Length: 260
Image (spheres, rainbow, N blue to C red):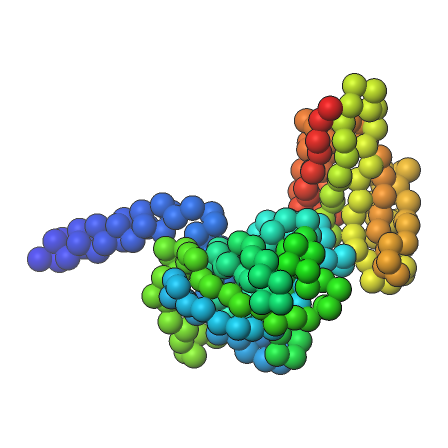
């Protein structure tokens, strides 16, 4: 009887393990993001939302400082992409956002958390706000409709028994490069940041100079970034950036290159 019981335990363990490891990396991130978290002393409880749900909410937008950093879903934030941040909807949820003032509509995917100010419920990427003509206003009333929710998050209900977790997104410094590569392009520029204070940038640059002595600091909209150049070879650049990530100098990288 003891042997049979042990065999059953092993079978159950293997079954549960297969379910866990069969999840994609994104599904694991989405599942982990459904636990409560604390920002500025306030606890937020992520929850599922039914497809077809419609609401009128306040939406702001974000760009500059967060451009190039990691989002809650693990992707590099691109303020020129059609994405959005929400405090409690499951990551990966797709919304149809409409500006009732002009009738313009846009489909966005939630890949980040926020906004954490006042009664704003949605933080649009800069490009999304520009498309909807809400950027200049800053905060605008929009209509949203839930188009899809990731399968792994459907039916999830928050529980206050779970201890809030510390969010790990938008941390560290990410390297980004936006370049048009032509036949005569020999070098490309790569930026790291953003640093809110020059002292932070100076401290980082001292460490970074050990690997790229030609790197320098430049000011960008009252913030600071590190800038350096590399040969315009994608394989070489990725190899060097992976090394910087491995030793902890950057948390990630994104190459947004186009080719002539």
